[in-house]
Structures are given as structure tokens and as C-alpha cells.
Image (cartoon, rainbow over all chains, first blue to last red; front, side, top):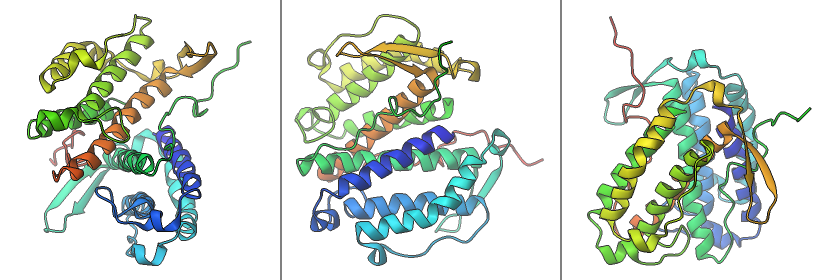
Length: 162
Length: 162
């Protein structure tokens, strides 16, 4: 489980660095699909990850909106603010938490039950999906997108030959 | 590990069904980003998943190209042909395989070493990333994309209250 979070955090950092090469008006431009545009989609990734980790811990959710974080600097600051809490939860994840149940109330009032394991994988897939969207927008801007490769990032400790 | 493969297989099936609503010329149209276009990206997902599972088993890789599979029907047939082998490997995955090593020779001759666990997660992330790209193209066509939500798909067996 942790490996895919580490992967996402690396790709997100790569994405911020890519954004440094993109004009702010392009980062903020409303685009088709995704969440608003490039920067709002990154904001959404940060927000959703943190919110679910909060929900699993029974803590209150984040209700800010993008208008308050509409620059690369502010999104990165928000990410840096949320990261320690997310990281602590993820790094302390163990398999005994897999089948803990979360009862979530939907906007329409229905109550759905998910396992914590499902929620964690939902958060993982959520980011990867949105990064895929960013890759299309990067190509439309004539920019090489961030690599989505998971291998080659040094995420697994490879035992040294003796 | 298996849950994310099941997720991908469900989303892929949903994607095929969405493709049924899209004209073949749109499925084949070359687009910016992704792999060629909608159908070629789905072909690529199927090809890459199977190829890595073959590589892990030390079996020969697939060398066909998209020109031979350039219809929704043919991609689905290819997927159905590959699926049993992929499924058998995935469903028999256990944690003892996590740190098995794969020595892979890159096109430039360098040899890189990955753990099997990394390769499996690479395959998972690969599909999710490309499905994210398809979601942009669906919106560009005015079509609601396949849901990328992992929760709510019944992927985890929820224990019944007694």
C-alpha cells in the first residue's frame, strides 16, 4: 500500500516541477475534463487525499475552495501543510486496518459502507487517474508530461548481491 | 494487490461499453497524448498488462501491432484471449513473490533490476493513468467518462452484521 502512495507523491512533486515551466494563465485556464484545469486538478488531488485520510480518522473535513489556492505556490504550501498528517497515517498503515469499516453518508442521505482498504486504494487510483488527465493537457501545450512509470523510481529496496 | 487489478478490469469493461456508444472513426482518430487514440490506448493497456505478466513468468512477449486489432471487437477478443493467463497469475499472487527480482534489458542494452512487486504496481498504475487520458477524450466528445471511483464497486467483501 505505501509504495503506491510514495509513487503518487513522487509524481506529484514531478508535476509541480513541470508546472514551473508553464505560464500561470495556462495553469489556471479552464479545460475540458479533469477538474477545472491543470492547477485546480492538482489542488483537487491534494484536497481529496487529505480529506479521505481525515475521514478515516474520524476528523473533520476540509471545506476550502480553489479560489483561495489558485497559484502553484499556494497549492504547494497547502500540500506541504497536509502532508505530515497524510504521511503519518500512510506510514503507520498495516494490514490489520484493511477491513475496518467506514460508514459514509452520501449527499443524498444514503449511507454506504466501505472498508478502509478500499478507501486507501480509492485515494491511490484517484491521483493516478487525474495525473493521466494532466498528461493530455501537457501534450496539448507541447510539453512532455511527467513519466507515469512506477518502475525505475527506486521505490523498492533491491537487495544487494553479496 | 488483487483488488486494484479487479478495479482495472471493471473499469476496462466499463470503457469497452462506453466505446460502443462512440463512432468507430472517433475510436480510431489520432489524438494528442495517450497512445494514438481511444482504441489504440485500450489495446496498449491490454498488451502491456499481458506482456509484463509474461515477462515475470519468463515467457516470450507479444509482438503484434495495433493495425491487426483496430476495431473494438478485435481489442475485446485480444483481451479475452490474454485474460485467463493474466488472471491466473494475479489471483495466485502472494506476498512471498513481492521481492522476487526481474532483470530487464532496456532497448539501449542497460540491465535494470525491479522487484516483482514493483512490476505489478507498475502495471496497475499504467492502466489507471491511461484511463485518465481516455476520460479527457470522452469529455471532448461530449460523453460522460467511465467512473474512476474505486469505492462503491463492491471490490471488498463487507462483513455482514450479525
